[in-house]
Image 1 (cartoon, rainbow, N blue to C red):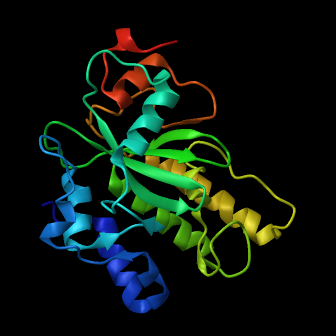
Image 2 (cartoon, rainbow, N blue to C red; image 1 turned 180 degrees about the horizontal axis):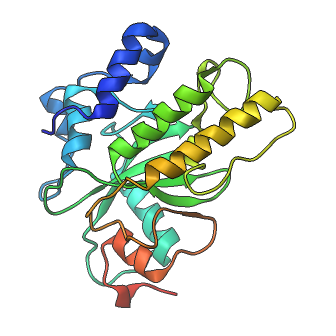
Length: 242
């Protein structure tokens, strides 16, 4: 298992000062937390550590809960490639959880061990697909930035009442929207989150096969480039439909 990341340690420190953050803590699952992983497949070391030893996730955690794994994999294949493939995919996507009730994130299982993995996002409301966080650590860094600048949202802004504004996941690649119900201070705070995410993402990197430098980070409601879809699906590019 990987050692605790800087972001996890910072969240531990902050939670000792502000117990409200404990709502985002994942409790230790123990050895049985990974029994669901199919034979011949590997969860990233970082994600496996969260599941088995506990950690942090900025929303609702569902990894490994009893629900059909094929649901997510079929959805990804059907959306990215019309459900078609000839070669067996080298990536198996499973549900990690929601950051907001409409924004879900998935993690890839591979045929070989890897230390970290990017997160594939889908919004059932905005209908975007995203690959903006190359590692689990990057997602938690974004969460910490949102906590720094916006704190806990007790009233509105799209956040769960009393929680951290979850829309930082969209601000990695695009500036925040300015709905009329936000105060000037809230608009400025979201702008600061966006600016800091631009700085942070410059330092994010991975050599994971699902991540394509130059094309990612990527968030769009439109069709993805074929090279990006091939990497995410673990299929030869010749099998990717336009």
